[in-house]
Image (tube, rainbow, N blue to C red; front, side):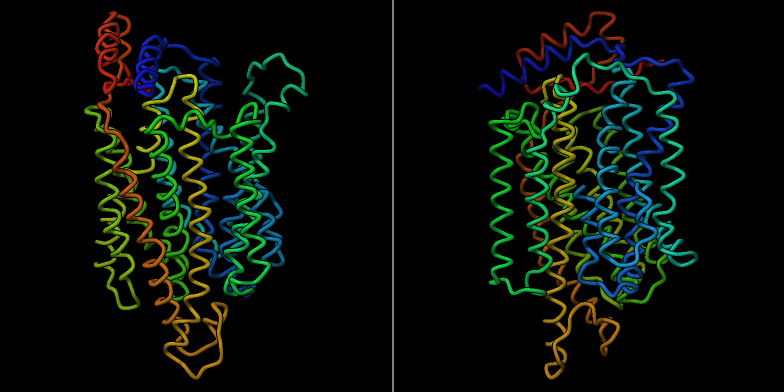
Length: 515
């Protein structure tokens, strides 16, 4: 009952929003420069998450660190720096990715907020849709660019490229982006930052990921080191929850928002979606490069069907939702077919033809493309207007954390499954690790088998969880409030209807006037 009342209140507040209001106004020329710098920064940050996927096998081979390669991905995802191209070992590279991740995470979150600040509500949907296109293009270009650099120059160029782009965007922002500041002291601003929540969350992730990375390889799962790390992870998680509920002035994840059903289940669904898609995008190149001896560029090309069809359905579903609504329906159908696609990916081996692979990736890309963006929209749909940005960030945050945990768990499974598979084929052979794939007979073929089993035992069950949790996302009808309706006072009729029917919720995404 309380949720219905809150959602009805949200509807009334949304209908009272001026669709032409702009929080931060610029001249046309400055707007173009600022918007371009936002988009280029967003492209750079998104590329950083995928460009290393085709470079990782070469990096792992150069540093002889197959057991640690997942940290190159997760280190970035937990937290554009010039330290990475000069890495002399895997440890320096991981530290560089941590520093880079701090900047990348800020760019991705702030880009969404800045676009909302500098565009009117009546046109915001057009500008925000560009984000989906950027994510899709980055997913396509990243592995290809990383493969090109690795094959023709050096994997280090995957990181050198950030330097000129980052400097250019920084100059544009410094010169043209002048935002009004709230009159408050530095200490007041610092007090608003949730430092304790941030550090406790990072502590939870780092302890858990180290335990997953070392468990069963460097230490046995019953080792005191692993047990202490897992206990520390649980402690930091409990501390994080306590801080968010009781002490944080402006918490990272405001607890009261989770009383909205769609925010809760859309966030959980997005967590598992991030788990699966991050693993596939970042680890499939390993199957092709180390298992089937493809070049880095060709391995990147194999991922193109997933990312192209992902972007196609992400944009297409957004268009149809804008016309007819039913966000939950798209998420449910997409989740169902993505679980089928995930299972089919576990069947790909060294003898699978490209035609079969293309069909599997087509099915998976078409289905998974409707999940992430629409889960964010489902959360926005029931969010109080003043918390729209936070609701958006929460859903993205869960997706991001899911990716971190997913890649770490994948690495744990692979490190433990590979020795098992090798022992099964060569029972008399001495013990091996995943680092030995190039040093032992048939190491590459067994590596592909281990990857398939890892997908089957970790990714496929999580894909089923995506579908199960998506069933709890309520399928509201989405009315799109037109600017012309507001000016002609038709919006009052919509408010009246929605007041009596909480299933008709107007979100703060609009379309421009029809000509």
